Length: 420
Image 1 (cartoon, rainbow, N blue to C red):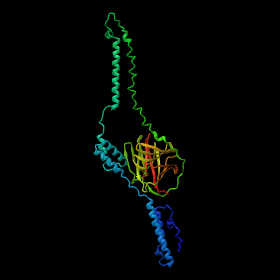
Image 2 (cartoon, rainbow, N blue to C red; image 1 turned 60 degrees about the vertical axis):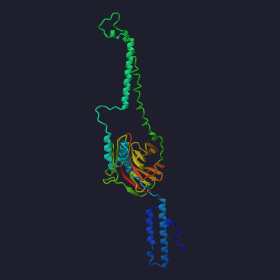
Image 3 (cartoon, helix red, strand yellow; image 1 turned 30 degrees about the vertical axis):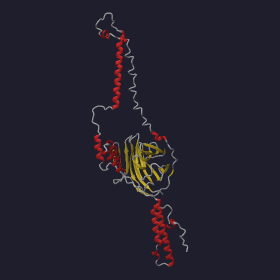
Image 4 (cartoon, rainbow, N blue to C red; image 1 turned 180 degrees about the horizontal axis):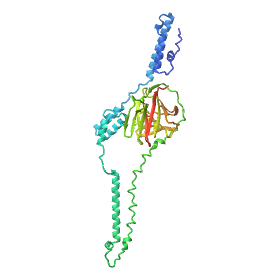
């Protein structure tokens, strides 16, 4: 006997679409098995009882098949590294080896992530006290400045001595001219050799030897500031398009009194929740100040947040592999620009940038799926990037970048959606 469900595949027998989530598959299975469970047909004709039994077996088989496929297709979520514990262990190793400056730098990096981690604050205070310079009443000069001053003084003394020797050679009887109150016989009082020895004034080699002062090669090395190689690879962003429909919200951030986002501060910067918003403030020149969390659904997700920024740049951190390796998706409200760049240690690589219409408060979004990242501003897709680096990571964050101006970024309505 051919049943009417024999030609149906596993998805069709449960009544779900291909690619349905495990929760949708389980819900559909419970619904179908309740319709054809043999207990419901206890008083029905024998033919109906046999049909229900066959269909119930097929429903169970389809559910087991789909569960196996999902377990094979879905890779296991990698175990997340405890980065804070790693930094603390590195600092302890530096201390044990006597590398106290390295330990201080590592502990300061840990303080930016979690200022209350174990005895981090106590260790930083002890190490900073060791390297606190003694108070001085006058101006402190660097060794390079002292060396330049000493060399310049020696050169001036040498030139003065040389000029004096020249003067002695031109006027061998300077005592006569030096005692104008005594008549000196045949030697005239206006001893012209003195006036005729303008070799002293004519030796502007003193001023002409600015080889000492000409050593401002120190200031002449603005190659540091000349490293905006970031902007050297400006990829033209695609014209904005309407973003695709997204999946359901799986996480909504709370920026109230019980917020699970960190609150911390340092010299010239602070992060923390206030009045149902998250604020990041940084003084000019501090660069990136950020806070991060871990997505509850893995690396493939959609992040959206409303941001308002005064100063320079602010936005989202994506694929946060660590403090020195992540992607930044930023907007500059005053200029009406967006950019996306990759940080890898001290290097930054520009991935996308362009002009975009911005208001006082803007909705930033990023859709991450595998190696593809779709960037959105105010529900418009401004760029789509395909990049294998840094590797996909479920950690993400909020960031303010203070370059030339003090920067304050205000974030609200942060949520994560599942992919549709």
